Length: 253
Ligand SMILES: [Zn+2]
Image (cartoon, rainbow, N blue to C red; front, side):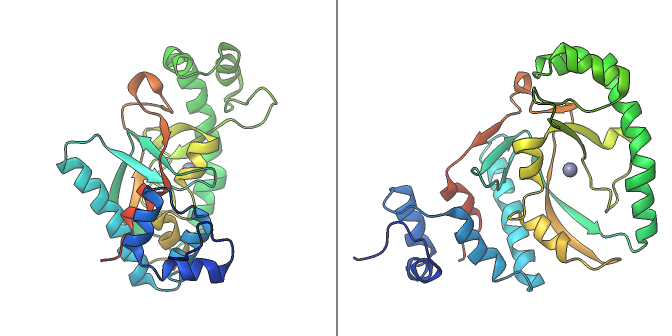
């Protein structure tokens, strides 16, 4: 059969897609087909991007994947898209959330801009003192922990670039608050970016959500028993997984 093993154009991609989802997965798993995952997801997600029901379906499929893993006795995790490869964020849990986008944007801006900054600063100082051992074990050098404690800033890498960020476990835009219990220090690249990746169904749905309306989204929630991610001591690491694993979640039956 004369299919193209490495489609590069939209027409070539369409030809591959016409083989059907199961066949594409089989070819991927047997390494007879290489695809640019981004092109494939663009096809799957972008053609549905104005269809709320289709995106709701994608969210349900991601949650069903989590539930199936639980039933099989597998540890929780979240498969998230990143341009450098799909990751399984071990310890994360895909959770269905009734997501309500705040109608009052002034409140959101106040919480995001004014309120968050000083609370974040105080929290960073606090964990640098109280959780110094945990931070060091997770790979933050002592010199960075000392800077955190002194200035209340996030760790930077050896080039002085932002390395970690403070992430709201439950987004501020929804019911999330600036209570430090809702914070986790998360590595920027790849983990934080992957959590907010465009090709994650929750992000896609939230993006389209009108102010003041609600949607049920499958949100990757960080593990509760750590203040930092990744945290290898607890097995919380981002593992690169085959693209086929990600595509399989969204299988159309
Ligand atoms: Zn975040």
